[in-house]
Image 1 (tube, rainbow, N blue to C red):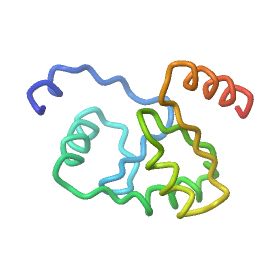
Image 2 (cartoon, rainbow, N blue to C red; image 1 turned 90 degrees about the vertical axis):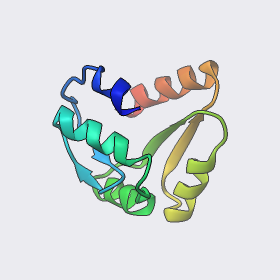
Image 3 (cartoon, one colour; image 1 turned 180 degrees about the horizontal axis):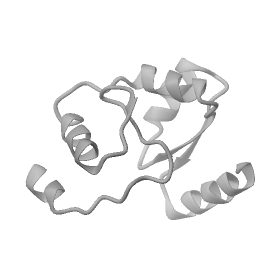
Image 4 (tube, rainbow, N blue to C red; image 1 turned 30 degrees about the vertical axis):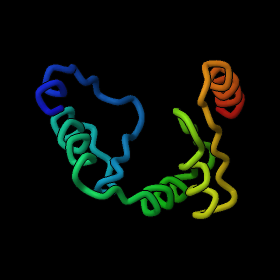
Amino acid sequence: FSERLATIKFNRPQIKLLHNVDVSVHMDSDVMRQKLLQQLTVPVQWVKTIQTMLNEGVIHMLECGPGAVLAGLNKRIDRKIITLNCDTLERFEQATDLVREWA
């Protein structure tokens, strides 16, 4: 994974990128690679990550992929979080339309 990751060009994010292995914002491409690698071996700090996002005013989230595990976790952390599940292309398109309305 690290070899393949090293070949990918990272652009500087246009928004804050909060890493869930250390619950910190890192914008440097080398650090972003390192944090992605750490996610394979270091437990993520999901509760602290979500609480940090809440403190920043984030209440709308998208869960991309099958199932709704993260939506369930988010609901247990704070019931005001709205997590949209995007497990199909149609649901992803609906969610992106809602995100545009919220912006």
